Length: 272
Ligand SMILES: [Zn+2]
Image (cartoon, rainbow, N blue to C red):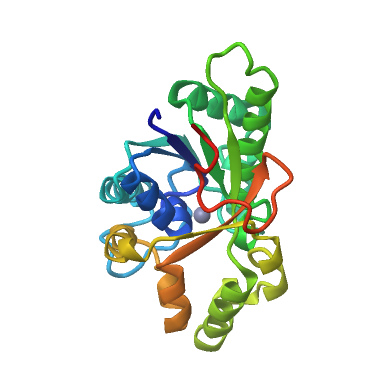
């Protein structure tokens, strides 16, 4: 059995930790090599008071947070593509010429193919097609990751390696609903609280794989804490939802199909 490689493709520094951190830690603990690739430096993000950051330094601060969290999780390489964070849907930053979502899909797909050809992952993990809560960078990163995966699949036979599986993050709508109801009650002015709950995450019944990692909770909390400039998703959740969030994560297998809930127990099932 050779070492398995997992590549996680995200949009902002913290998506890899908040979105898949427990799964990444778990994969490392099972002997896999884990690499993350992040499209932007997150410069349009919020700045929490506890962070020693200004709008001018936020990109550099978040880059360091990304690398620190990667180190805590045992990630072998934390790659940044260096595009500009496009900001939340509908904000003026969406329109900046260097914003991630203004780049050509062809360019970003080419970047991701270059990373994949070098890293040679067995499994690719990316954000869900709806971006979790509709963030345009999440949606674009996911779409580009899928395109890159498909292109390499199509002409992969002669390469001596092959991408074997593709997964989407799948935040169960039941958990998202619990988190959002609390946020709406506590922070009614938070723009995120205005998002329709029925568009959040994915319907629970679409989930095909749940990865449990209760043994890594402390390490995961440490990785979360590395993203000092950002609000932790845990702060938005009722305690029991946060406890679940720290102990398991759900995914939808996009390739190979068909995927049925419970047809496998881990990301690397069926890969020699
Ligand atoms: Zn994000």
